[in-house]
Length: 189
Image 1 (spheres, one colour):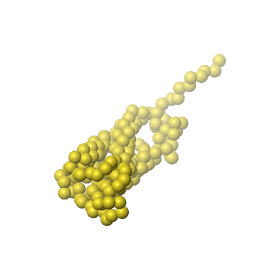
Image 2 (cartoon, rainbow, N blue to C red):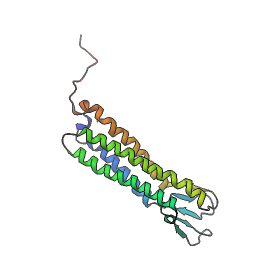
Image 3 (cartoon, rainbow, N blue to C red):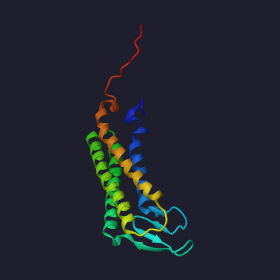
Image 4 (cartoon, helix red, strand yellow):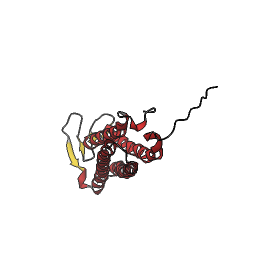
């Protein structure tokens, strides 16, 4: 990629591929039941973005309560879902932008801006959830925010990093398209 830039056929799909990985991580975060789990015995609590499940003792039946009954639960789910939908839109736009033979750099900068907006919404949902969950839901023992919550944060971090990359990419338009004459540091005697 260093030698050929984004004009090289295989390397131009790295950014849409990374966005696709971010979409997969977002799906895992939305569907996963591991936002909060009991860390120590008794393992009696498990929660997702959508519901909180408890059981009275180890091996008992899980009873689940929807978090959509709480205003903060609806707010956390809505903001994270809006961030995820914006990420999916950015993924589709990136595929379109990089499929065109001549890269549209102003279009790419717009995708970067939209990724920052998606990151803001995702982070809002990721902050609302633990703050309100830990104060309004009664928990037993030691609990931890687990793997699905981590996938949510990974998605948000990817949105920020890819937003920077998409915004900074047009600054190197000439180098990427090969319009700059190469400079050599070695001259023959």
